[in-house]
Length: 455
Image (cartoon, rainbow, N blue to C red; front, top):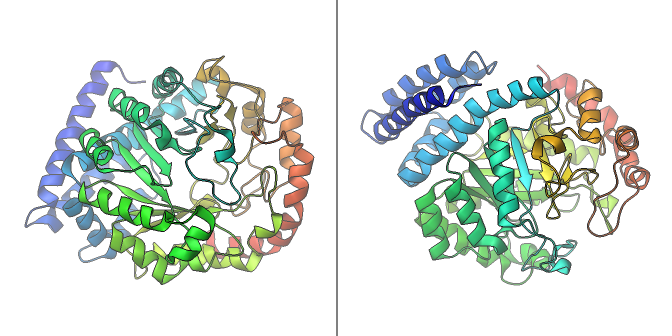
């Protein structure tokens, strides 16, 4: 672990480099500046991230799609937001923080996450079809003190990247701004329906610099999006995009793909709308049949899942595709070594304070209102994840619930971890019985695809 003095000196050097990069990348010799800083980044990061130099050299060359994406970032993002994003997300989280989480995992013999998702509240101002959140009002919340303590303890372990889910996080708008101001060395990614984004809030985010947004959107057609999210929701998102862009903020989208919408949300029309509005990235999440009322039939077919694997990689490819960084949480397991849950790279904390292996896996026997974060990371189910991972060698079958439904019951029973589901405690055998037919259907296709893409 670095001393405070060494950390301060290293951070100052990165700050100077970041300021020079932003200034030079906005100047007339921007291509040369990018090349120079790319060489410097490869020297600094190359040894700790295998394949880093090869990847960035393939992506960033004069005239490339990703060079143009980078120049748009420099030209359109507020300088304070861009600088803070580089320092909090790049230096503190990805560079220094990641190394510290690895060291602390070894020191404490437990998984220490690089990313923590947490729910400030279960409350939501929407009543989207198929979502339970609005039924719970303001009953379940993390206090400001809970959140502050969590982020403080997380940063001490090396975690500087926090994703806020819910409920609708911006129901707690004032506390989130306060949290971001108090923890300028951390980056906060808010998953939001964007209906509560307004001028005053955007001005505060612009001032702070360390908040980015992942906005829920399910179609480029207003009627289809609003059919699930409520009348006027599409227009609210478009308005929020306009406000964010005017204030030079960093934002993208979050989309759940199902058997019913998978082609729609990966269409050229959808991506072109996002780019036109100023989105820099797009998260895609496979539908998970979790909780009361979950519909297993909405899971994509094997053919559809193979389609989206290729489509997302095509969109973000080095050549052609689109100028937006698309990520598929389930199919991109290949690039992060499979399942990242159970604290291996991330974990989830619900609005009651329960520390869960994953945002989709609601079993836990540790709560941040009762224990320190480190104690929660050392709970039995997290230890079981650490001891038994990997479940297999195919990173297109990463999940112990979705593709390996025989695994999650073993983990839950070994840990004697109770269900933390808000709606109704769910027996783990019942949950995995819902995914077992999918796992069988996907297995042959996953094995074929793995041979094709693993490289």
